[in-house]
Length: 201
Picture 1 (cartoon, rainbow, N blue to C red):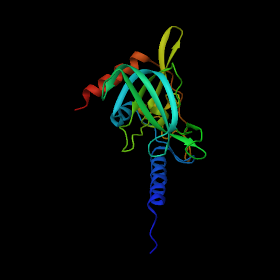
Picture 2: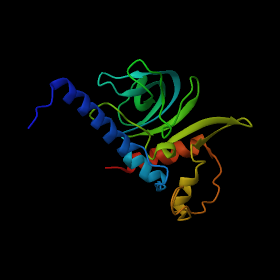
Picture 3: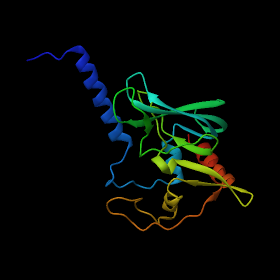
């Protein structure tokens, strides 16, 4: 049997790990994304916080994987580690080697400096990657509308219809008709999340 050179083995290992990460957190276009209600979002999150984006950086991590680092100033920690700042590392996409430009992966929420969010975030993987629970379902943007602060996630709050038993899928194969759910007042969402977290043993 022919021995694999150490360097080639290392490159193969990195590529294999990248594919495993991608397969585990990014749905294929035809894959059905199951809607998660608020209790499921909160239960699956290792960290829930309210914050605003300070900066977004892209590049390759120490393993050579394309990554996007987003740093938030934390306004309120609802679950998990508390601190004034948190940096989340999400999988990115690059076309080329380590010098290629990295962009946020198409399946991941994108953030802009200055925007405010409520995030439900998975615990970090062994390589330090994370993502919102349910991808866009766990990323609620805080908006000012008619003098009120409201929240709407990246699927238009459609997953919250699950609580009324109205939705079955959020797209892809077997697509279901999902009723429109209006944006929630920020304090309504936060009150429900605090109650869910407090009720968790």
